[in-house]
Length: 480
Image (cartoon, rainbow, N blue to C red; front, side, top):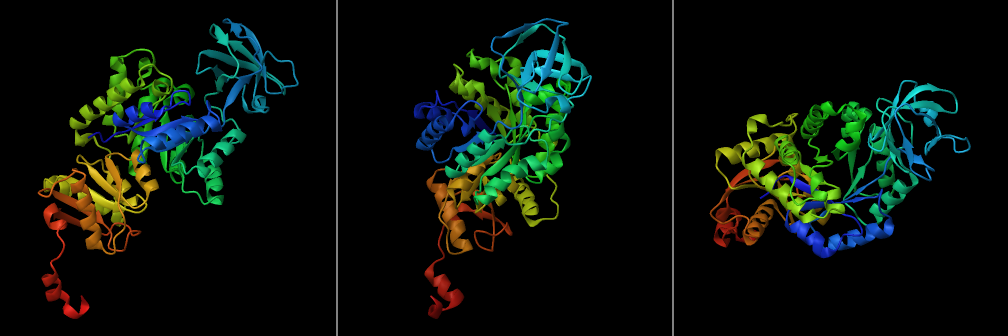
């Protein structure tokens, strides 16, 4: 049973239910839609097909976020080392290269490097005035239209949400989608801009902050105060900061997320070669393995499943690697969250300790909001954690949490009946058997309560109702 979750990007031209089912059957837990490449019609098509396949697959929708791009490049511009190029964001001026942000010249300083098309072309700013950046080309290549421009070390004061982003946020609200992954999050305000829209509509959608620049790395603590989770988007991040720093920065971000009990997704080019080839490189296998060793909640596929020739094979490979690494992990390298003196953290930690020392089969919890399950997930259990959820949305939210296997259950009238129903349903699903011993984490304060008790239960005892004669001895016949 794979504990590390898989996020797969799906495009509207390759989203048949049969394809999605095959991806799901082989390990995909969350479907991602990239709004940079689809419209509402395409998103609706993907969403409907996902929901035809399973009610357990969560849907994550990306915003485009604040980004600078080349515009009005009618024919590809071939450039050579040493060429001089005038850059402007003012569309009324004659410039060699125009960008889509009017205040670009104001924000960029002399001596800055502009990286175009994921760093394929580099321009160095040797001078500027009120209207233009005067740049020099430092490598040969071709500048194309609508290509991204990164400016490492520079804060670009674009609004966090574009008009298209706002439209897709409303689309997500209207269609009860589980997650919005916001691109290029720089600070807490970028998260709050989306949260404000969600709050106005009383939407429970969870926000995933995509960390793609130095400012987002520097302000990760304040971002985690407001985001549900984090995606480490190594594509743009690897352009914004030196490539050799990516592993240590990624490790730091993972540690922060686990300590704060926030789901963390590792993304970008994990099996990039499998877009066109049936087998991955050894380096790609090691990349997946490192993400699992580092205890990411989820690992993500982009072009591999969106438009690649070997999408299903890529998912199968990712699942195989995750299972193999999980079997051979060394817990001495685990990052564990602090308990912080709150009851849920304390009991979650003790649940794992009890499960290991008592040689139990599983950890079981019932959860109204996902709170209890996420706390257990943060401690990275070696055994399966079965979360019985009262709401379908919460069940799907668990698709991003490490080691959690969620399913639905109806609420019961008291604690004992809840435990009995949870255990019986797991026996019926052949996930545990009556001779197993499990650890149960629950609440004495109703289904909305935070964790308040921990029990070690032999399943056959937990599923047996109390005989009526025992009830009479306990409470008397008048009260029956």
